[in-house]
Each structure stands twice: as C-alpha cells, then as structure tokens.
Length: 209
Image (cartoon, rainbow, N blue to C red; front, side, top):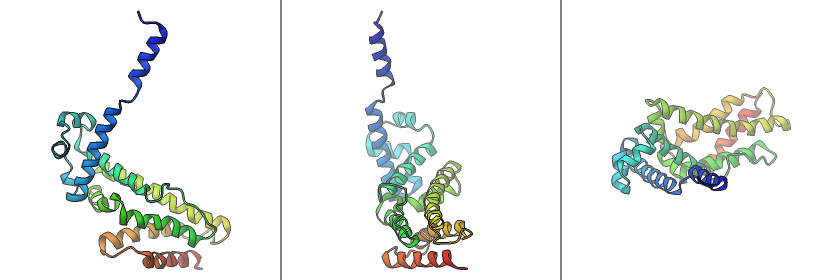
C-alpha cells in the first residue's frame, strides 16, 4: 500500500496536463489554419490534417470527434491571433472619442490586414450561414468585439463629450461592419487615410443633433 504522500503525488501526476497532448493539438490546429487560409473551410478535414502532419486520424478524432469541432477549434485559433495585433482587447481611452476610436479600430484594421484572422474571416462568415456551431462561435466573437467598441462610446458619454442619447448601438455596428464590408465585399484597401475618414464619419454621427 502506497504512503499517503505517495498516493497524493500519484493523483497529482494523473491530473497534470500532458504536454504531448497540447503539442499534438497545436500542431493539428496550425496545419488546419494553413489549410483554411489556403483552400477554405471544406479543406479542413481529419484526413487532410493527418496527411500534412503525420498525426493519425484516430488521434485527431479523439481530440475532435466531429468535423465541426475540428473546424471551430481552427477558427478559435485564428480569432486568438486577431488579439495579437494589439495584445489586449481592452480599449485604452486617451481622453477623446477620436483618439479612442483610432486606437481600437486601428487594431482591427491591422488584424484584418496582417493576421490569419483577416485571411479566414470570409470563410468563417460563409460557414456561419449554414453551420449552427460556427454561427454561435462567430456570434460570441462579434458580441465581445462590439462590447470593446461600445465601451469607447460609453467613456465618451461619461466625459460629456457626446450626449447620453447618442445612437450607440448603430455606431458600434457601423464601426465594426464597414471595415469587413470594405475589405471582403468591396475589395478595397484598409489604410490610414480610410481609417481617418471612417472615424471622422462616426464622430460626426456621434455629435450630431
């Protein structure tokens, strides 16, 4: 019979995360993300990832029993890289609506231009139209980003910079939706000149009336 301390150590070891499992998941999702960027959502399959990484299909199915689980893990990994554009999702108020919007929307522009999220976003949006789990994942992401931008307007209201009855919900939608429309629907560039004009329009809307 094991001593109590030895028994405790054994249980602790059993509960400790296996770094090999984490390494497998990381390797698989990185490969899946590359497939998603290069070929679209339909290319992300257990078989394709097994072929590109050497990880057995049975191992991949143990991690992600359903194909949509695998694809959503890939989307989540890409969404996490969007945060790398600024290191945090919290706005950094600088005392004016214009400056705060430049901070937070500038990071969104960088994410869409320079991170994997910007490359796979059209595939994710398309998949969300028919896949409930992807739609839920995208919905949560939109809700989180909307709250980030909403906090900028709430700070401006608290400072007395804009009226409390300003159309905050509409301005939040405008702030976030236009960059996606411009880049992925209209096929136009997101650059500093566009960002200045976009923010100027939002600020004009915020102070109107």
